Amino acid sequence: MKLVMVTAVETFHKDVIQLFRKANIEVFSESDIDGYKNTPSVLIANSWFPSTQGGNESNLFFSFTDADKIDTLFNYITEFNSHLETNNPIRAVVVPIEKYI
Image 1 (cartoon, rainbow, N blue to C red):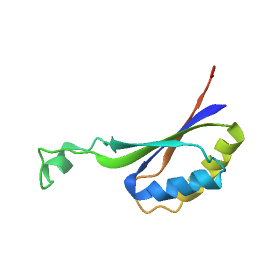
Image 2: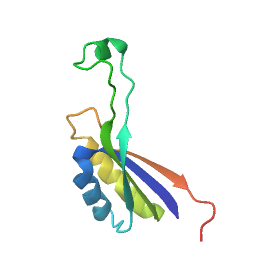
Image 3: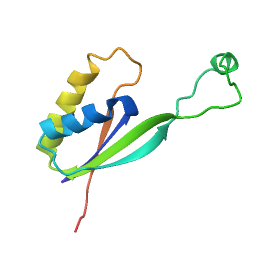
């Protein structure tokens, strides 16, 4: 068993859920998060509201599941990201679990 964690901007919320289902990962959780990206100070100075630096609405998905399903999910995410026209790909990591109950 491993823990897979996936982050994506809110725009891809439904897409990530579909990718989990296509990979046969039926049990997962999600949480709303704010994503931040360090930008050069020149870009901040040129924004409409340079004193406010809010995050992007994003989602964190996670599931405790089998390695073969995670491999399938990673293949689907790689394929999805290969067709993006934005600078915000879906990101995923795997964390091994040493013990669980």
